[in-house]
Length: 156
Image 1: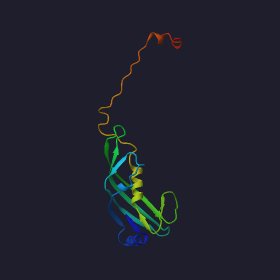
Image 2: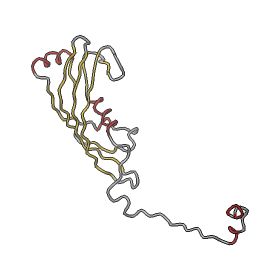
Image 3: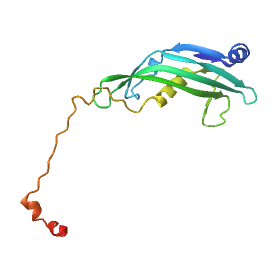
Image 4: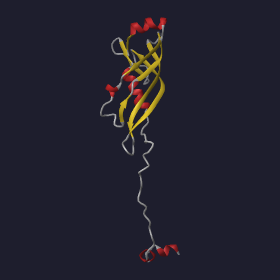
């Protein structure tokens, strides 16, 4: 969702709460190897303005369902995701945890998607991934050649 900084300054005194649903499927690209799909993302929270530093702080709660590929069978697995995060925006960057405001608008959606990528699991395994999985058992037997080896003397 996009807000202008002027609009946020007005809303800060009236109602600093927000809640909306976003479609972030357009952000999925070829770099998202295991991520196949994402449900509608429920975003809610509040914001504050720190006037002295000219910063906008968003306390955000995100809830969605990711569709990821199983690491073993490549079957699609649904993964529920729920987390909270703080996003800080400012015209001058004070540290690495701050995002720069370009122009006069703040768009939360790309930063929400970036946090979803951070919070999603590295790999998922489907419930029945190991049902048909088997490994051949290899049994080593001692032969007479092994007993005549030069290392057999070291045993004694």
